[in-house]
Length: 572
Image (cartoon, rainbow, N blue to C red):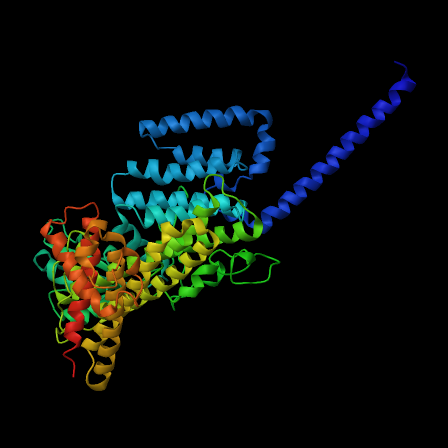
C-alpha cells in the first residue's frame, strides 16, 4: 500500500479517535448531570454505595461479567452457610455492576427480606434486615425512578413483611413509632413485683406493644424500666402517682439511623410534629409541577389523603401509596411489571386499604378489651366475642387509650368505605374479577357500619342527656345496618343449597338463594329469625361444614351488633 493510499485511512482513524473522545466527554457530562439530579451520591452512608455504577463498569471493562458471576456464586454460598460477614458488600457490588437488570434487584430485595431475615436470631434483627431490603429498593428507585418493578417490590415489603408476617405485632408497632417525629423520652423505673400494674397503666396511658418491652435496671433483676415517649410517660405518671415508681426525662437528639456499615437501624421519619407527612416526601421531581399524585414524581403523594397520623404510619398505608403509584404508571405510562399481571397490580391498592382497615379495627377492639380490663383472646377471630355485652354505664376509663380507641374505630370505618370504593373501581376496569372481589366489597360495607357504630357507642358511654340520646340513636342505626348486611352476606355465601328451605321463610314467595340480596323479596325484619334458624342448624351439626369457622366469625359480628342494640334501646 502506498503512502498516498494510506492517508485517507489514517485521517479516518484520527477523526474516529477525536469523535470518540468528544462523545465520551459528552456522555460523562450527561451522566454527571443525571447523577446530580438524582442525588445519587447521597443514597447511603456507606462508601461503596457512592461508587458510580457507570464509572465502575468502565473501570472494569470486560472483567465485569466474570466478577459478577464470582460475586453471585460467593454470596449465595455464604447465604447457604449462614456466613453473612461481608454478604451485604457483595450484594451491593452486584447491584452496582448490574444496575440495568430489574430481575436482579427484585431477587436481591426478596433475598434480603425473606432468606436473610429468617436467619436472624431475634425479632429486632429480623426487623432491621427487612429495613435493609427496603433501603436496597430505595437505592434502586433513586437511580431508576418510576420503575414499576421496584415500586411494587417496595410496596410488597410493607404489605407482606411489615404488615403480614407472623411477627407483625412487633413489626407494625415499631414501624409506626419510628415514622413519627422524634420526641424526648421518659425512663420509668419500678420493681419487678409492680410490672403487671405498670404495664397495664402504661397501656391505658397510650403506650403501644413495641413501647412496652421491659428491661432490667439492675444486675439482680429486682428493678425494671420502660423507655416511653414523653407524652405517654407523663400520662403514666399522672395515672400511677406512686412514689415507688421513678420517672427520668431523657432528651433525644436527632440520631443517626444507620450503623457503621451503612445498614439502617430504624425506619426514616415520615411525619412532622403535627403528624402530617413531611414536605420532602411530597415535593415533585425537579422541573415538574405538583399534581398530588404519581404524575409529579413525588415519593408519597397518596399518604396525604389520610393524614394526620396520630399513631404513626401503618405499613399498609405505605403499601397503598406504592401500589397506587404502580397503578398510575400502568394507566398513564403503559408500564408493565416483569412478573405480575396488570390485574394483580391494579388490585393491590384496594387490598392494602382493606388490610389497613382490618389492622385499625383489630387494634381498636384490643384497646377496648384493655379498657374493659378483660383478657385478650389468643385468636384474632375471637376478638369481637369479648366485649359485646359492655353496657353504656360500664365506666371505661377515659384518657389516651380511650381516645385512641374511638379514633381507630372511626378510622377503620373511613378506610372500609375507601377500600370498597377502590374495589369498585377495580371491578369496573376488570369485570372478570367481579366474583373474586364482590364479597370483599360486601364485607367492607358492613364493617364500615359496624366500626362506626362502635365509635359512637364508646362516645355515648361518656355522654349524658340529649347528647347521649343522639349518639345512642345513631349507633343503633349503624349497628342495625351492619347486622342486616352481614346477615345477607351469610345467606349468600354460607347457606348450603340443601338448607335454603329450612332457613328462609317459606310462603308464596318461594324464596331462593338469589333473593337474599333483595330487600323487597327478603325483608329486613325477616333476617334475624332466618339467621337464628341457620345458626341453630349449624350449631346442631357442631359447625361441621367446610366454611364453619368463617360462618362463626361473621356471625359474631352480627351478635355483637344485636347485643349493643339491646343496650342502646334502654337509653331514654
